[in-house]
Image (tube, rainbow, N blue to C red; front, side, top):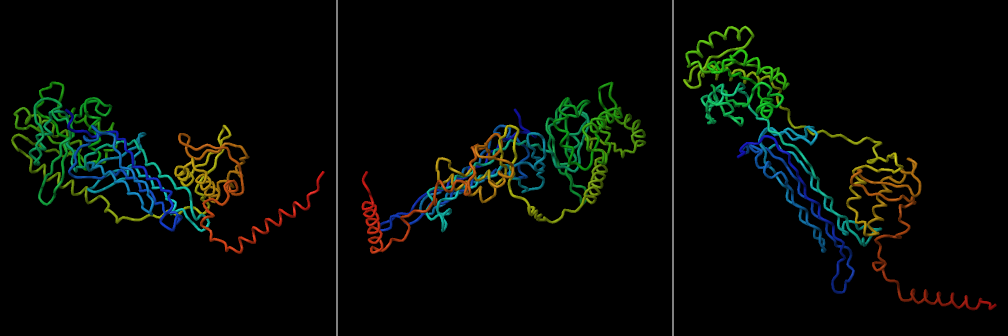
Length: 478
């Protein structure tokens, strides 16, 4: 049964925004009290947050589809819909968020660090919010925007100061168990350790973390054994410790060749050349192991390695090793640049940025791309002529029609607003008001106009009768 997962593909869906409401206030003696449709609620976000109590991505391996709640639609009486609830997904410290092609979107290190993986849709405006001096009674409301749909990959890279690397059964798990309070599974057969083990070590005034990285064998960087799955856990470590078995029973192995093979795999993986190394000759409690350690030590020191002879079983040489690691960790921490205070970066838009682009494609279709036009299209109810006219006016005010003319568009040409897989396509008919003439004074209800005096109404009726009589008198029969 799987108990540790350090890489998953996650499908997240933010909540949709609630639709706005088109409503007219009614009460006794006031049948048309004006628009009172409320706004729709915002859709919930999907947020990844580092939680120190979480150590694996196992939950997302079993349930890779996660969705936030939708916003509620607005209601009459100026009642706005309730916002959707954000979905907060806890992830381990050291989680890297990537898109499907491998681009890094976020590197989540440190408790409480968050990343919005999917943005909730905006709620649509109700007709009360759309009312203006020219549009006193809008007969439409805006639709809520759909929430983002994202396919992301989560990769866990262990956050530790020291990484123990070496062949299976070299004694890494035994070493981490005696240096810290970690209790990993220990046995004398290869691949006993199937997951990275993490322990906390205190040496004097220095407290550091140490990780056991399992599964390194020849070909690990190409995916052989378990190495490729766990080499990523070495990336964040400041110090690498080669744990070499001096009492191996395999005749074709020795500590020096083991070191060369593991170093070759680390070089093939890449990005680890600047990490300081320490060599640990383990199992010197075995007589043959002690003799072999004394034999290979001069060769290793000649290569520039600092060598320690230890026995995890007999607890020999552990104190010197622990303080040496603490010294290297302290130097590494001191060399790192101090974290700067959070800065707010303001990037103003260029003065010539229209907020949209118009391009002519090979098939003659004109495509409009931009945040505002695409959002307005998503918010429009195309079954409502008044809403379509409102969209046309917005696009005209933004300058889309002028840009289409400059690009060479003519009456009847196809225009698409949005990406290829989700665009609104229509035949363009240029007009001065982008369709306003057909719909007249949209949103203005004559019932809201002040009533005319009775004397004025009588004069108007009399003028109509006089005009009709004059037309009869001027009529000449054939």
